[in-house]
Length: 487
Image (cartoon, rainbow, N blue to C red; front, side, top):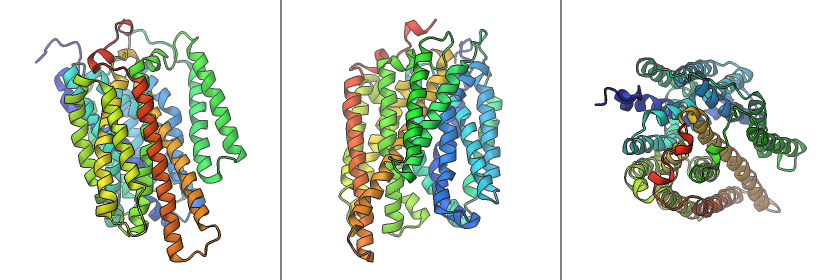
């Protein structure tokens, strides 16, 4: 259609969208698919409940702390190369985890998965950003990507349930080999490796302070989940993270080739979109984690049935995300979409907060999923599109890494906060009561409803913050390519 189009990926852009979406799906569903496999893995490898969290935490620490570096590596050395290295590394680490015969090997494999995921995720999103430059086509592409980001966790629950129930927990890791093989074959065939002619030097002080600060942040929240917010290690790690991240921002204002050019985050639209992703991640994790507990422990659903229970939400996410980016955002801008998404998410959480011991799926859970699904579709598709629009192509990798970083940080904060509050609510209800089956059942409901009320508050905060911060104008003007960044 455009034989002399300056973008070498233009002619094959829709096929490229397919392989990028496949890679993104592999990364996104990894969190929940492994959660489903954890009880079986624990039984097979004989590790304690205290150690169980490290299967999830090891991945989160490596992924979260290395994302900005991974994004900048893609900018410096070419996104095709970075993308393929990330895919192959992720697949090899998944194979090692699936074959693990000890707890230590499984944790090491999960750490490597996180490190290669930090290369892969920003490379995929930055390739999408630089491949789709036409406004209308970009909206469609980011609608598809938003569907994956918003529904990948639910797909992971379903796929994890199928694999664990009919094969083995090990296949929850082995399945990544199929995803990675297909995406790698497509990447080798379809992508061009574009390396900047004048490669800037890597910002080593910035890399060290950012990676160490993000590691401290992720570790501090993970430690708070098990040891409490008042534990000396929790306080010390979070304080060190705050100092390191403050130093990182100060460094970025002074160095010639910053790891994260501050113009990326200081733009009003992008800044609002980053905050939307962080706050949505913090609130939404309550759905997948604690609602999974309710469905399995209180309603007695199997892992497969639990995955199927989330499908209505997945379907509404897919529909809303596509409509939002192709029809609504171009006319109304990102602010109404994200604000409406936060409102729907909060409303769904308030509905879930009414759960009782005798509640059923059809009346107690399904309506909330049908309310929250459109909300997630509006938030994720709109925010990911807005957060990456207008970024200088040379900064697309690190700009994309910020999208993943904000989701990761939000999810870590949310999981730690909600887990702590759930435990406190349960303990508070049990205090002074005999632990009969009826009392234990009510204690679990108290923990879930507390979580859902707090998650509703987080999303309501997101509604207010994004409503105030995001500009009230259509996306073409709000997030079009900024002339000051184009040369």
